[in-house]
Picture: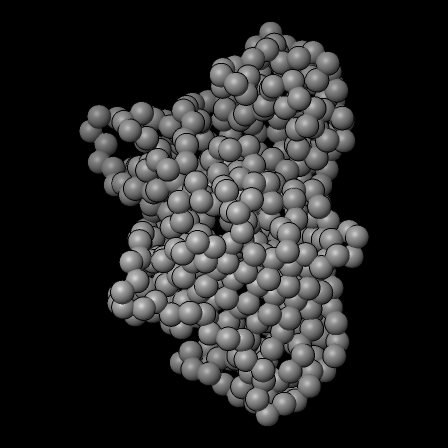
Length: 243
Length: 243
């Protein structure tokens, strides 16, 4: 297993009003670490796009002990642990300056054919670079709890903005965190700290669409759904603790 | 005049779909450079907030020769050039790896009393640190062209989101760029490159409000207005060139 590490200083524009790293930036830092590793191993974006293949993330699980503050220097470690012909499991560990683990992200990745956006077999020469363990079935992340028929949800619509689309011509994954968080009342967000996120992507969203961010809140838990034209685009489960 | 410089690598989540540094991130990099300088000079945020004072920006002028791409390493230089008892003028120069100036930002700053949000006199001991030139009147940035009565504008409403609010409990300035850009059709944005921005702030926006982003487009120019409850919050003028 090849471990890779990046170092980041949390900047003011990466923090939310609590002066701590925002939820979307947790994802962005993690993905950055994996991109840097792929580049270093010689199988970065130019390489796999050259073969018509792209990486996508299917699911995230995030355990947050403490979000770092503006000015803190943190390290993000990553490595591919397991793979089979279609999936890779990749954890990320966020460490503070005292080597304490403050955030842990787990993730399931797959590759898609960029022309038809269908899942593709992982090329052996690419996957070999990461030195992961070949397994029959990669260990699963549990599914986030679904909405039930009698759940009373609140919702808000979000127009997909020009800046939501990244250099891959798709909605940056981290925007889902923003849509899911924003639908919760600021009074709740300012008095509760997030401790856990489990987010599963189902269907891609394109520029120009309007999505609905739906939430069911229950004590220290919230269930989320992103809907695009009555189709589930993503589902998630967040856990919170009172500050 | 004390010059200060920071170095940044453009990351994928700081770029838009063109794979170049996004408009909001141009502002964020500039403000970061000035924050770092203030910290180094011992008159950073903790220092002036300790006196109940905060810096705010009144106007930006941005000249864009070329936006840097993902992976490029750029330097942002800044210095305070002129001040009088109420205003400071601060330019920023963005340089690429070959020392070419690619972006120039000019800006006018003032300080406010954090309790009543009114303009405050700049404390001499703070302003002295920057080694700027004391002048009677600081040289002005021209005002952006106003909407005229018979301008046909298009508009879109934007709900102020939880993540639009920064650690100072106010809308991050860079969000105005996002609202102003987003109201322009993607077809136009994908075929035109921005060359100039002149943005003047008039009234602050708070969390929970819905703003209107209005635009009048004319060949290679666009005029912008951000309205909150029929009051102008900001006005701007953008210039574009066909790609």
